Amino acid sequence: MEVSKKILSIMRIIEAIPGYDRNTKLGYIASANKLLTDKDREVMTDVMKAMILLTAGNQKAVRDPKSYDPANARDPYGWLLGMGVEDIIKRFGLDIDLKSKPTREDYAIAHKLLPILGASSVSPEELGQYTDMGTRDPLDRYGSEGHQKVYRGITVSRNVILKATTKKMWNIGHGVSTSTSEKKGMEFAKTALSMWGANGGPALLLNIENKSKRGFHAGSMSRYPNEREVILSGMLQFGDWVLEAKASSSEDDIDLLIDSETQTVEFSRLVQSNGLKRELAHKMTFPNSSGDSFQEFVDRTIGGLEFDFPELPGDWEIREGTILLKMNAVLQ
Image (cartoon, rainbow, N blue to C red; front, side, top):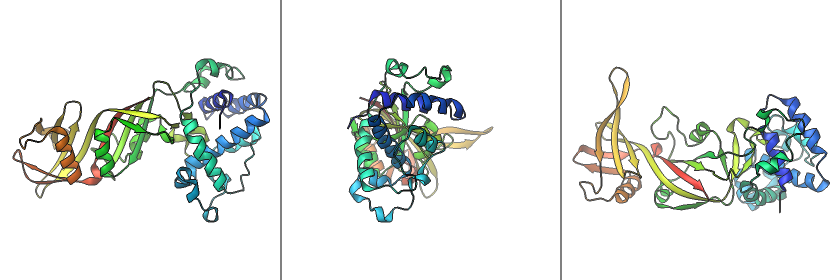
C-alpha cells in the first residue's frame, strides 16, 4: 500500500490552512481536486477513514482489527467526524457513507496505513508543487513542512517505567499519536505545569526530536482538532530522563526528582515563605549511603515503591499514581 507525495502534500496543506479561514480551505480543495485521479480518491478515502478511526474510533480495533465486532459498533462515520471534515469528504468526492458504521475491513486498512502515514515525509520542494493554488498567504504554509518537536503522553505500568529507564531504543513502528503541543502531551500524561509528578499515573511523557519532520498531520481531520495530532512511526532513541514522584511517611510528604544525566536524586517540598517556594531537603549522589548504584536505587525505589535511609527518617512509600517519567527521545 502506497500513499503518493501528491496526496500527502495536499492533505498537509489543508491541515496548515487556519481553521477560521473556511473560504480559503474550500477554495484550495476545489483547485486540488482537479489534480486527483480516481485512484488518488480511492487512496485518499482510505487515508481519511484511517484518521477518523484512529482519532475517534475503536482504538483496540485499530491495533488489532480481528478484535472488532461490527455488531457492537455504536456510531456511524457521521458521528465520528470533526468539524469541517464532512466538507472535505464531500468536496473531494470520497467514497465514505456517513450513515454507515465502520467495518472490520476499514479497521484492517487503517491498521496497514498507520505505519506508512507515520513514517511519511514531504519536502518543501514537493509541497511547493501544490501550494500556489489560491493559497498565497504565507500563513497557509505554517506547519505544512512538518514539526521538529512533538510530544506523546501516556499512562503505563511501573514495569514499563522501569524498562524505559534502561532502554536505548523504542519501536513505534506500528504508528502512534503525538501532538505538536507540549501542553496536550502533558494532559495525556496526567500532569500540568503547576503539578509535581502525575495525577493518575504512572505516566510517560516523551519529548521527541523529529529532525526529519516526518509524520502525518491529522489535526484538522480529527474529531479533536485542538490536540494538534501528528501520527508518527519509526524507532525512537531514548536519551536523558528525569522522573518525578511523591512519597509519604507516617509523618511527612516529600517530592522526588531522579535525574539520569547527573545521576542524582533530590528530595524537596514546597514551603510557605513570602509565597510558595521549593526547598531542598536532601540531595543523594551515588553510590549512596546504602551502597546502591544509581540504577539499583531506581529499580528498588520505583519497583518496590519503598525506601529508607538515615538522612530522611521514617519508612517512605512512593505514591504510585504520582510517578511521571519525562524522557527525551530522537526519532531515527
